[in-house]
Every structure is written in structure tokens, then in C-alpha cells.
Image (cartoon, rainbow, N blue to C red; front, side, top):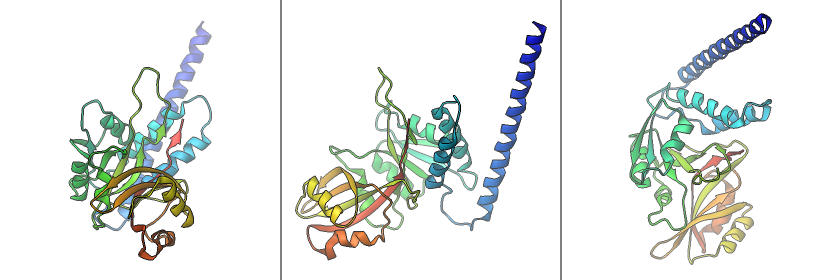
Amino acid sequence: MTSDLDALDRIRRDIDRIDDRIHDLLMERTALVEQVAQAKAPDDSIALRPGREAEIVRRLVARHQGRFPHAALVRIWREIMGALVGLQKPFTIAVCQMEKGDGFMELTRDHFGVVWSKQAFPSPGHVIRAVADAQVAVGVVPLPHENDQEPWWLSLTAGSANLPQVVTRLPMLVQAPTPGRPEPSEAFLIACRPHDNTGADRTLIAIETVPDLSRDRLRALFTTAGIDATQVLATHRADDHWVHLCEIDAFVSADDPRLAVLLGGGKDPVRHASIIGGYPLPLSA
């Protein structure tokens, strides 16, 4: 019996030693992040790097072994990265919460952790204005839907210099629904910075057409331009034109030459195309 107790004590001491090592490495990581922040030229941009964060989590999940759950691994690193994102300057988050219990505040907390202030706003439009006016660093808005009465994504097509873009999709790890519980929430994160190219991304592009086009016709236009459009998320009819929000299975920047092919030299049916952001592909449980 005494031998068993001694063995347990040794194991617990080993666990304490490992905890100290983990803590030491966490403090070392924090110091390195501070060095990165100091090495950057001072500007008004936020320290958020969604692409870099996605690459870190993908690498860790790919090398992971043993019985420690992947979901817990991602949650730990999300808490670490979320805590460190505001070391350079104050970091606040606007969250669209049209009704209590919609899950967006919890989704935001899972992504950014418990440190930074989260402000609830009654509509996506309020969130977009708060981000554009630099009242907050980033904003969380619902995914677009076909039946949205006021499509928030239209305001990101105006071409203004200070407009936010979609930069990531929440959650980073998509898990299967739990029986008896509501579907897990999903959202877009917007910020006043371009979306990143991580090698496994989706791009959101709004195209204006006259006349209206079927989804098959839209996909054919993208295919002709050499772009793989995965789906049409939503369509909005204005006075004399239609705007379609399409998702592209790749990183596409605003200066991509394929967009000129899509526009066809300014001829109908595509009159205008706007990149409103994109996101690294989430991991799947």
C-alpha cells in the first residue's frame, strides 16, 4: 500500500513539474508576442491575424497524438491567442445580439476568450458601423441568409476605404450537433483589414447583374473566368439590378485578373464585383 502511495506521489510531482513547464512556456510565448508588437511600425491597425491563427491551430491539430480531445486542444489555443491579441492596444468586440439566447455571445467568448470586453448590438448594421467608426476592434455578425430583410453584407460593397471586411468564420472548429440541443451558432468576424491567404480559404464576392441570373448561370460565369464558385449565399433585388453574394473556393484578392474576365470589360450581365472578405476554412471535428 505504501509503495502504491509513493508511486502516486511521484506521478503527482511529475504532473506539477509539467504544469510548471507549461506555465513557463506560456510566459515565454507572451514575451515573444510582446517583442513582435514592439518590432512593428506603430499604426492604427489591430493586431488581429486570423490567417496566422488558423495556420497555428491547423499545425497543432495535424501533429496531435493521444487521447486528449481535439476540441479541448483548439479551445486552449483559442484562449491563449485571444488573450494575447490585445497586448498591442485595447481590444473590444461588437457582437450582434438580436435576441437573447441566439448563441453569438457564447460563440465570441469561445473564440476570443474571457479577457476582452464584448458589447452587444441589436443588429448587424450597428456592428458594422461600430467597427467602421473604430468604436470597437472587430465585430461578430450572423451568416447571410436568402430571406434576410436587411442584408448587412450589402453595406460592405460600397467601396469606402474604412469599410470592414469578413476576415474569419466562427467557430474555428465545427462540431457535430448534439442530439436534443439547438444547432450550434455560426458567424462571420469582420474587421478593418484584408482577409488572409492561408492556402485553404473561401472568398466572399458580391456581383451586381442586370438582368437577374439563375444560380446555374452565375456558376457558369465564374467557371468561364476560371473561378470555382461553391454556392450563392444570398440574392438581393434593388431598383434596376440584382446583387448576388457568392462564395469562392479559394483566396481571391481585389486585384485578381480573373475578376476582369468575370466583368467582361464592363458589359452586361455582370456590372460590378466587390470582394467583401473571406475566411480560412474551419476545421471539422
